[in-house]
Image (cartoon, rainbow, N blue to C red; front, side, top):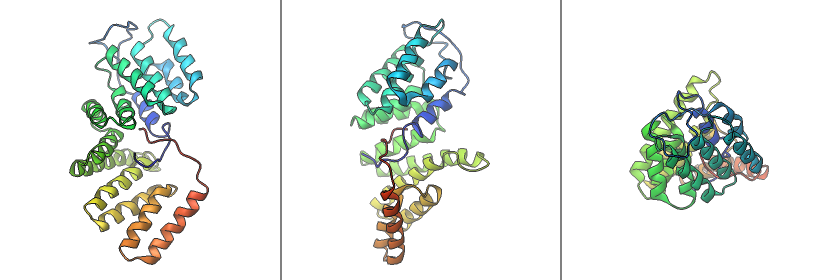
Length: 266
């Protein structure tokens, strides 16, 4: 299992909220599978509910209220329910709801991304790989799906593919970062992808390449303790005792004040 980093709300739900601005149409509340008129953008009443997905039962109660509204989108309700369980790291329950959303609306693309992470944490690497690929067919520029594909390929031992996946994740997320005047958007996502790319390069081994990725990651997101720990190890392997000590000191300082993190789940 990959190292922990940003919370699900920081990463995965940011992606989900991004879905809400996509163009879409259709408001069929039937439980029959939909083959046309599937709305990709999140229905307006569900957007604040998704933002409160970490509230668990309270958020799920709001989804049930939404279901009673005329024109409620059953497939989107299932998607948001899945996100509430994903926040609780109840990946089995989350998977059920994401799959139900896809059963109701096979062309609804958002659940594939989250199903990928649910499958990943349940140990279903082939299922995770398939889900991320399906999401990328609809959203080829979604860096976090490239990241999910990367950690899956890495765990499957497909290092060449994983390297390209992480580079794609960096490129896509960095493009969004560059669009932000303050360059803060997706900075954490770029950083974590560079850390995982460093893992691939270390397996080659390519110490210089790994060090470069880790140093760039640390610059983008200096609060991430894992980055400094790995950087200290790489610098030590290169014989840079002073650099290794500095990175180790930074790591220990961050670790001492670090609150427990939620799992990886973009």
